[in-house]
Length: 384
Length: 204
Image (spheres, rainbow over the protein chains, first blue to last red):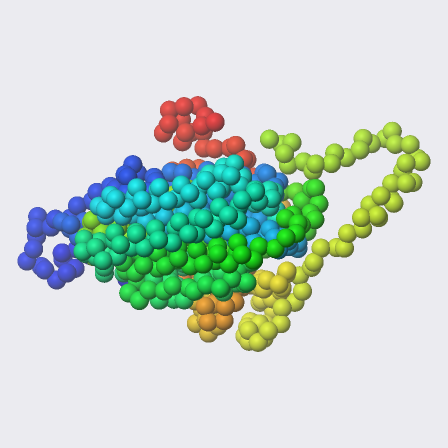
C-alpha cells in the first residue's frame, strides 16, 4: 500500500523541467455542507487539475459522545441511543447492542424473538441498501432511481411503524428479546412486501446495470484489493466486492441466521460497479431470508426471563453483527454495576471511510463522489 | 448528574435499626442466592502454547464467556502483534480501544480486537500502560489502526510513537481534555474553546 502521508508532486514525477508555475496543484474543500457527502463530511482534496493527488477526511461534526453517555446510563436506558448512530439501519444497531448485553448477562433470547429480530433486521438491511442505491445513483447523475427506491423503502418503514410505532429510530428490540408481539397480519405484510419487492429489484437493475453512463461512471472506479481491504479493516459489501466471501451472518452466526439458507454474493474487481452488484444481490438474498423466516417463525415467548435491574457480572464481551455497512461491534466492560464501565462501538462506517484516500488517489475528482457513495457511510455512525 | 451514578437501592439509614429485622435480614439475600458470575479460565490452545514458549510469563491467556483474550506485557507491543499477524494469521484488526482505571497504578488498558479470516477466530490482546507512557504504533502492522489510534489519542490522551499523523480525529484539534477518561465529567467541555469558537458561554 502506498504511504498515505506523501503526496506526489511534479518534481517527484521526474519532470525537472517543469517549474512550480506549471503545476496545477490545487487544494479544495469538499463539504462539510455538500449534498453528495451524505452528511457532514469534509474532505480536503489535493488536486492536479482534475486528478486527485491526496485526500484528508475531517470528521467529528456529528460527534455526540455516545460512548461517554453509555457510561452514565443503565444498560436498558442506553438502548435507544444506539439507534441514532447508523440512523438508516437503526434495527441492526439495536440488535447488536441487545445481543452483546445478553451475552454479557449470559442469557439468550427465545427462538421466536430471534426470528422477529431476523425479519426486522433483514427488512432494515433492504431499507438501508435501498436508500444507499437511490442516493448513490443520484450522486452519479441518475435521478430516476431515487424516486423508485424511496417509494419502495416506504413499504418497509410502514411495517416498522405498524410493529413498533417508529419508522427510523425504531428501538425495536429489548435486552432479552422483543418488547412487542407481532401485530395481526405481520406475516402477511412481510409476505406481501416480498412479492412486491422482488420485481422491483429487477426494475432497479433494468435502470442501471446495463446503463452505459452508469457503467462508465462506476466500472474501474475506486478499486480496492482484498488485501488492502483486510489491512484497512474494511468490511461489509466493500470487502465482499473485492472477492472475499465473508459475512458475519455465516462466519459467526447470531440470532436465527444459522437456520437460514442464503448465499454470500461476491465481486471480482473490487470497483464501484461490483459493489453495486453485490449490494443488489444482497437485497435479493435478504428477501430469501425473509421468506424463510416468515415461513418458519415459531410460537412461544418473545422475552427471556431477565431481572428487573440489569447488573451483568464483572467482565467484558465483544459481540459483532453484520450490519448493512459491515462489521458493527460492541465491546462492553461491566464492573458489576447497573451501568457499563466502558462501552465501545466498533462502527463499520468509520473504519471503512479510512479507505477513501487509497481508493480515490490518482482518480478524477468526480470519482470522489462516486467512491464516497459506494462506501455507504453514515456520518452519524462515523462520528458517534 | 451525580445521582445517576449511585446504585438504585439506597442504603438503609444507619443507627436506628431494630434488632429483630436485623436478624432476619441475612436470610433475604440467601433466597435468590445467585451463582457467582462466570469467571475467566485459562485459555489453552496450540496458539497460546506457541506464544507461551516464546514470551513465557509476558502473556496471560484467558477465556471468558467463550471469548479468548490475552493480557500482554506492554514491552511486547508491537512485536507480539506482528507475530500474531504474520505467524498466526490474524490479518484483520477489528478494533483498537482503551479503558481508563483512574485508581490503578497503570491507568490504561489498551485492547486490540483481532480476527483471523483463515481460522474464523477472534481474540483480544490487552496491555496495561501508565499515564503519560507512550506505546509504539501498530499502523505498520495493520494500517487500519491509523484512525483507531487517533481516536484513542483523542479520547484518552494515549500517545502512539511512530504514528504518521497523531492528531485528534473527532474533536477539534485545539480542544483541551480527553473525554473518555473517568475524571472527565459527562457535561464537562472545553469552555474556552466553546467561547472562542461558538461565541457562547456554554454549549449546553
